[in-house]
Image 1 (cartoon, helix red, strand yellow):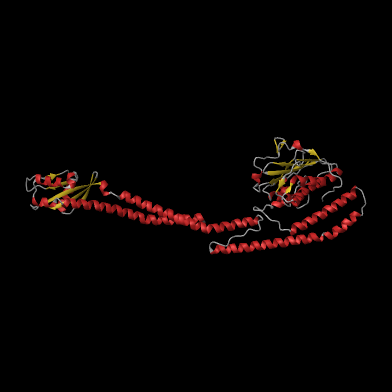
Image 2 (cartoon, helix red, strand yellow; image 1 turned 45 degrees about the horizontal axis):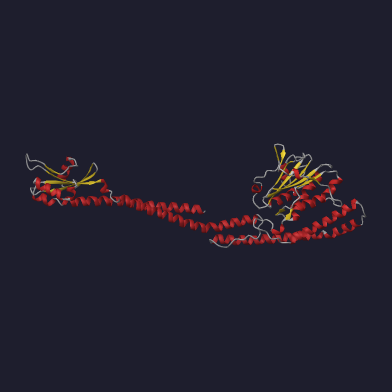
Length: 487
């Protein structure tokens, strides 16, 4: 809209300038011509008194040379022959044709004739003897157009200044109109990305102020609806505590043994998850710009992955699965809340156990590339025939770490939302173990996924797997006793 306003103003101003400047330029040219020939008429009139007194050649020659145009060779006098056999008298250089001279002499009216290098003013003058002489004054072309070029340049400069000024004014007016609209569009995008505290200043034209008021009211209602939804989730989760209490009491009466310990551990973990859901639903955590979790919402990815792998390794040992864990030997801080990362990892590992045969090996690798953290969950299962469908919610694949047979695909959706909340993404490929490899890109600067991956390509290329150095840090990891499946 801003550029449209500028273009309209530019077109209108240009038309107005052309409409006034072109006629004015032509008038200036005509005025310069009239001035030049008016001067020529005045100069021709100075020789008139001499012609009424005498037609003597010497006298006329002195009179012509005494004038300013005569001294410069621009004035000539043509006296007709007196009677039969008389001699025609011409003083000065003749430039006009004899036909033009005869026409002026017979008509008795002044005329302008075009001659090489300019124009000639032919002025008839009465002689004392009763004849008609013609005074010729030569006017060069440069005198006819003297000052016209300068005047046209001034007009062009004024016109350009008017156009530039109008464009500048239109641009400032456009900015005043466009900026509120841009702020409104940006606020709508921010609200769509999850920045619920976004509001729009109520300023600008009346229509945009009304739109800002409506947007702010809508944002307040969205916040209220989300708060009600969190409260409902907390209430529903709270209702699970009663059956959990009964389940925990029953598990306590199972006695001793690995199965009993695993059952009690699973019940304890389930109770912990329910408590986490309740706390998360009731808390209003601060959000930084870009929709990323606040400074206190991050976690140590290595610690969380070690904890969850320890939890799942017990079931892996029971099923005869080989587990490999690599890249968790140092602290790796990521802008993801601990419960969210744990839920994403549990979703992927749960898929491995559900959709691959017993005895299938799997691995979890962590690579820190400076501006991103890459978590690779791979298995030796049959793989996923259609990774794109597996990533589509509600159209999961059949096998591997990323598949959920007959499910809605919510597990992979949880993982994808965790990755995308940091500017990363989720991809499914073929692992070096022969099965599926799920790659989670977690951005550390909250930028786009492409920036998080800049300079880092992880995956199979020419039969090899990157990043370099990850395989060298691989260590075998067996489950800790007492841990149970997180189902």
